[in-house]
Amino acid sequence: MIAIVKYNAGNIGSVTNALNRLGIENKVTDDPAELKAADKVIFPGVGEAGTAMNYLRERGLDQVIRELKQPVLGICLGMQLMCSHSEEGDTACLGIFDTTVKKFPATAGMKVPHMGWNSLNTEVVDQQSSILQGLKPDADVYYVHSYYAEVCKNTVTACDYILPFSSVLQKDNFYATQFHPEKSAGIGEQILKNFIEIPA
Amino acid sequence: MSLKKRIIPCLDIKDGRTVKGINFVGLRDAGDPVELAKQYAAQGADELCFLDITATIEKRDTLVPLVREIAAVLNIPFTVGGGINDVALAKEIIKAGADKIAINSAAVKRPELISELAAELGSQCVVVAVDTKEIEINDQEIPHQVRNKVFVAGGRVETELETISWCQEIERLGAGEILLTSMDHDGTKNGFALELTNTISRKLSIPIIASGGGGTSAHFEELFKDTEASAGLAASIFHFGELPVPELKKQLNAAGVAVRN
Image 1 (cartoon, rainbow over the protein chains, first blue to last red):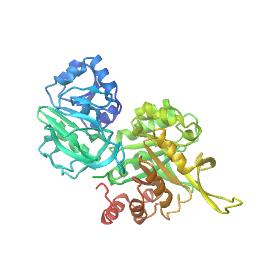
Image 2 (spheres, each protein chain N blue to C red):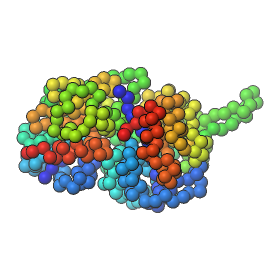
Image 3 (cartoon, rainbow over the protein chains, first blue to last red):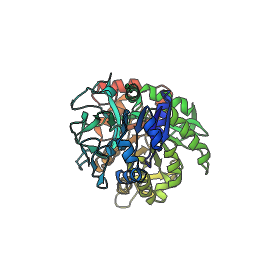
Image 4 (cartoon, rainbow over the protein chains, first blue to last red):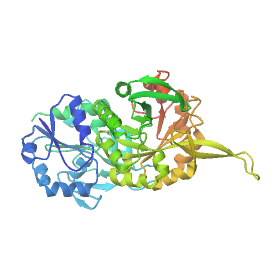
């Protein structure tokens, strides 16, 4: 069973829909026992970092997520919350990935949010990741974000928009994507399937 | 690396079915929205736009369940618009699974609604649709002046608003995107309103989706080469198979326009 972390962020339903389309059993929950017992955990989200972290801390979910031992996939805001700090609301985050989240600098001719289809990987950092199996670096995925995670030692792939940023992060059992696999057509479905198939 | 140019089929919805007007009159039935949505996603459409033109006051009962049904089958982002005039309904539609909501007349009537929606949902969820038409103004000193004016109520009612300054105001109020429909070009299949789209897309830093007049791949090519538009939207050419999305993307690729494959 795949547990989807329930918290005060938008678009959790999109992840449920995507897993349902793939025929994968899933449950949205904020019960620590259920999260710990799940085969895999998805930590999705669209929203604001400060209010999301407050919500997680008030319920003790910050500690629960940090201590999960099974494969965990963070998506978009979920990924950013797994980093050490976010400029959005000057927020201390979960500290799973050794990197910080910053706002895209205003740049002439470059629209922010970075919204739409862009490559998974425009700067090849490292293509070795179980969730990217079978994918080409120029595969397009769907991004919607105004903040980005800086490239760091956990960066598996970096996309370049205004500057290079982490499009996929991985550390131990923690995986994360800045883009939305649940909205990224067939490529996104492949990534979700790859995550589901990681041996427990 | 810049974003890929987006191709967006638009589905006008009336009483749960897809329709498309020619110059906003004479509707033709083009099928079931959920089936069409799946087909477009499979064909490689980058995003879909659903505009509910049903003339009902109470949208919650019909539109929200339809959005839920579409969200369950669709693996690409989609926008929902048509008669959305308050934050509560917009939130319900987003919660039902839409990625963005589009507002039009309600924003003209009460521009603060744009800011309220952006604060509640995030700018990236807020699209403001602008229907624009060239109006000849016969000033005594300068005869035959052409101005771009904003129309509301499905293009039936002219407003006082001048199109370019209204678009700037929309950006200032916090919208994430503008869907710019040229009523002069809509339904003609003679090409997009390049000059106006270019002017607005260069003045603004939020993405512009151009709509109205796209009939051939050459029209999309000139849209993406001659303007800063982020996306091109069309309806009937896609619905009736005149220009299938895969064919359009193949042509754009060959012409050197970066699209998602």
